[in-house]
Each structure stands twice: as structure tokens, then as C-alpha cells.
Image (cartoon, rainbow, N blue to C red; front, side, top):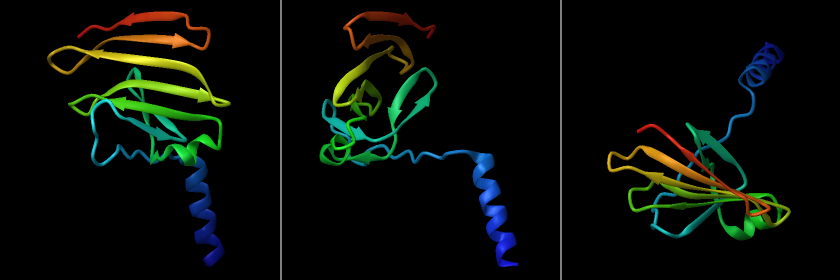
Length: 118
């Protein structure tokens, strides 16, 4: 009986795939950087998974940084690979709160601007 339950739990985990905890910082201060070892994609933008402090994530060399605005929307997302910026995305919103543009900068500092319908 015990083996059957464990088997079903294991199968459920395989079906669902990896699950990433999403935990936006509890008290967001606009303009401050927050860090995580993982990210999730929400619509056309990246956002941080479970928040960690810089000392925790830096030791892994691959980590993510997010900066939020005064309405607690992600404004800047940076991905670090081996301690260097791999890419950056900067998000722009209209008055209704919809993302209307993002600028993606790669590790070679090449920028690509993408417009969205609002």
C-alpha cells in the first residue's frame, strides 16, 4: 500500500514536470533590485521566482535580478550567466497597466525593441 502511494506521487510529479515557486517580494520598494535562482515567464515577460538574497544566488554564477516599479510591476529583468549579464529586458507600460514595449539587450549590448498592442 505504501509503495503504491509513493508510486502515484512520483508519477504525478513526472506528469506535472518541474514546478517553480513564484514568490514576489512581500514589501517591494520601487527601484531596488531583487534576486532569484529561477525565473518564470508571464505572458511576454520574465519575472523572478522565489526571492533570494544576492549572496545566495551569486555563488551559483547563474541567477536573475528584477527591479519593480511603484505599481509592483516588473520593470527590469536581468539574467546572469557565470556572473556576467547574459541579457536584460526593460518593460514599458501604458496608463492602463498593459505592457506596450520591451527592449531586450543581449550580452554583446545589441538592443532589440519589441512593440505590443495595448
